Every structure is written in structure tokens, then in C-alpha cells.
Length: 263
Ligand code: 5IU
Image 1 (cartoon, helix red, strand yellow):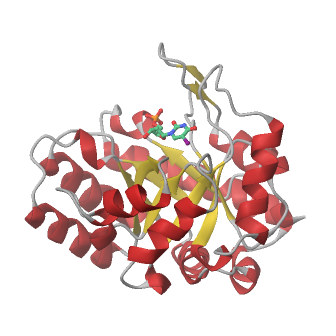
Image 2 (image 1 turned 180 degrees about the vertical axis):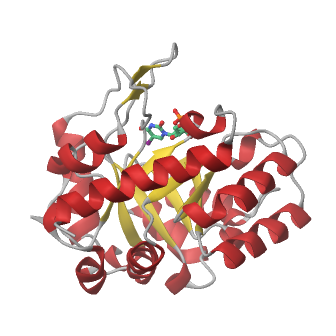
């Protein structure tokens, strides 16, 4: 099964160039930690990127929560990504028709297409949402999407039929060269080893928050649930030292991956 395969071997099977790049980055940098930089000022995000950059493969943003967004912030974030060798994912969860999504991706204040290597996308509108994003991606080789098939939140409405349709889109659709992976909670979601499983809801102290979020430990998500990349937000952001916390999460996620594949 894909969960027993090493990232290097899976890179060879990936259909999207950006998925190959990310698999290889994870293997060489020895990290499968994605930090969810859910803070509201550009200074705070840049500090997270500088301090945690050496420990992560991916930095995930919610650009619409930033109070003082500006274009020089984007330049600074891009240089930190280059300096520390991580990719940037905007967790936009696009969900409109292809044409509108294309406009939202490329235009407005944020111009996500210019700086985000990866974006998250709902499969709800159908194949055209991927086509829309792809149609305005300046360089298809350095861009890609993650499709959602499961959410970590209590009571979410995604059912098996929706999941199956989404996986079909990711593996047999027209744009498989643009789909890097799947955001989900369990290995059963998909079998194809060329896609990356990104799993949010990770915290050393399991449990939940009071708004429906549910957490599992790094070891559980990687070894029992098939996560290739674990997404950690508050588990790191609320620690007294975010640097130490990032290092700890990195070690625990990576050791779990090594155990899983027999490294
Ligand atoms: N996120 C989830 N669950 C999901 C999806 C995305 O938590 O199913 I799809 C996002 C939301 C937040 C981050 O940006 O991942 C998790 O942050 P915390 O570790 O602080 O809960």
C-alpha cells in the first residue's frame, strides 16, 4: 500500500510536477510538518516563517485573516520560503464555478496565483473548478491543488459518495497533472501513491477545541491514518517557544513516517 512506500519512490509516480517536488523536498529535508500560520499580522507570519522555516516542508496561510496585507509581505514570505526551502499553501478552499474561482485565484487584493505554490479546493462544483485555477496559473509546473475529501471538524457533511467522486476527479480527471494531493483524515480515502495525504487536526495533546475541531497525535495520524504531511497550527502557535515546538512536532511526525516505511 502507498503508506509503506518511501516519499522518493512516490515522487516518481506523481503526475503533478509540484507533488514530485514536494515529495523530494520532504525526503531531503527530512520533514513532513506543515505549519498552519493562522495569525493576523504580516510580522507574525514572517516571524513564524523565519523561526520555523528550517523545520517545515510547507507553510499554510489563510491570507484573508491578515489585517495589514501588502505586496512587500508577499516578497518577504517568498524569500523566506527560498531561504529555508519550504513551499507555500494558501488554504483558500475555493468552491465556486471555474470562471469565478479563476478570478478569485488570480485577482483582487491577494493575487494568490502569484505566490502560493499550492491551494486547497472543494470538489463540490465539479471538474471545472480545477480547470479554472489551472487556466490562470502562470506556470503550471510550479503550481497545484489539494482537493478536500474529509474534514477534521465534528459533524461535517461529507459522505462516502462525495469522497469517491472527489478521488475519481483526482485520479481519473482531466487535470491529474495539476492535483498534488488530498486533504483528508484517513488512509482509506485513496490508494494512488502519487498523491500526497495532507492531514490537519494534529496536536500532541489530543482532544478538541470548543468550535468543533478534533485532534489526533502525530503518531496516530501518520501510522494509523496514513498522513504524509501533518498540519499543526495551535499546537505550535500557542507554545511558549514556537521554535522548540516546531522542532518537536517535526521530530515526532518524521519518526512516525520512518517507522511506517521501515527507515
Ligand atoms: N483545517 C482543519 N481541518 C480540516 C481542513 C483544514 O483544521 O479538515 I480541510 C485547517 C484549519 C486551520 C488548520 O488552518 O488546518 C488547523 O489549525 P489548528 O491546528 O490550530 O487546529
